[in-house]
Image: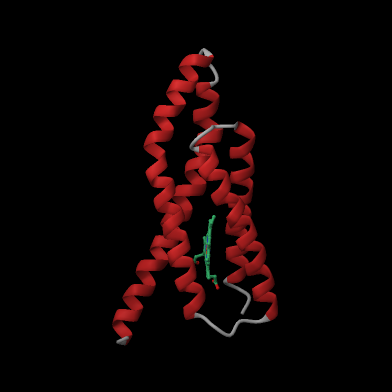
Length: 138
Ligand code: HEM
């Protein structure tokens, strides 16, 4: 691949990774901290209906963000080979937490359990912490 095309693709996919992470983790942090408490003030029948309407709008964004993170993450990983053992250990923990975030997100858009969203937000922010560590470990 010509060097300029590789640079452009790298920036584009880095943006996809960051934007998808912001959307997925930020979206659920907002839902847990603001939307769910607001919905809990409604009678339970109205609450379920309101959540279903919100989830229907959020679902395509969640699927897109998960796809974006997987594609850009695998690309990012493959174009930077030759990392140390410590890098791979931290990366493995990041993958386990990312799997928890993806599973919790897919379940939460079907059934909004507050505990599920709390767990998702905690794992999501830990994943971002580990990503910051990975940028410093080689
Ligand atoms: C909840 C899911 C995820 C979140 C919130 C997340 C977040 C992040 C963030 C914030 C960065 C720093 C980006 C930068 O500085 O440009 C990063 C880097 C990275 N991510 Fe992810 N990520 C997630 C899932 C994944 C997945 C599924 C993969 C691989 C399949 C992956 C692979 C990587 C790689 C290889 C890097 C570069 C690390 C380095 O600096 O060496 N990420 N991630």
